[in-house]
Image (spheres, rainbow, N blue to C red):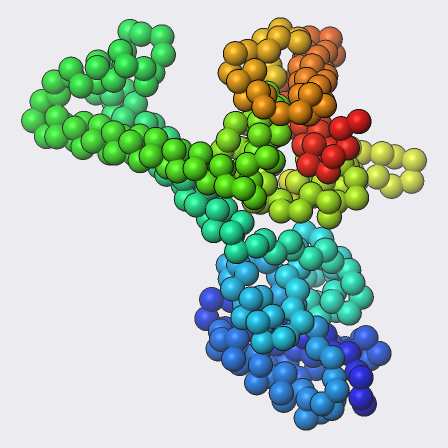
Length: 372
């Protein structure tokens, strides 16, 4: 049985792995084994399979993207084991009327998808990209914590009937008003602790943003970040996040495939002559999709063709072709937003999602040099 290709499906969890061997000739998973969550157990399992299928057996291992990240992938590939990470949303699975989900069935399904190539592999970033991505996500976690504290402070004031007469919260005037409040008894200490947390997180975010500027100035990111910042609503944090999350833009053959990867394309449930359009699929990278959706909101403001001083400053130093391409995109997207909302009476969120999709396509064109 030399030169046999065995597909090893691995259903991985924090505490345990469930492994199985799948052969395309038999279309059946066999030798199912549950092991502790350790890559060495996977290597022992492969050695066990060699005693059955022969020393010349070719193994292709795979597991779904999840809590383990890229750790198991690197541990296996460093030991010359062919391993892939499967994107769960791309795995083709036949659903029965009554679904039964177990670790054994999941491992067998992964092995089947590997054998039949019914999946798309997850892009494995470089070590530098992975470090930068973790730093950016850590910064975003602190931003969420700051947002939560703001909500808690406003809720505290509302519960105790402290009402701010100004128009905008979290301005200097609003902060001074919060500090001037004199709640009674323990309430004063509660408000002071909230404000101290707010101050700490605000200072930390300012420090992290400066560090992100330093990371973006590295040679491997500098030029690409400058190009992406030519778009309205895209600044250093968003540009760098998109770069490290996506990795190689050229792995997408077309802009539509890139938008599909981000889950920004509409779903469809059609049968026969009846066609039903659904909302966006929300498949793929949720983090990048959220960043582009936030960036698309800036196209709902300003005149068509107008360039702010901040945008001109970000575009400075780029090639004329790059700036012209970005200006064309900015004008088109802002015009499209106004046309959808004012001309076709589309909802704002629908228009912003459509803008986010086209912005993703323009970014793909920028990063793949399709700017002619």
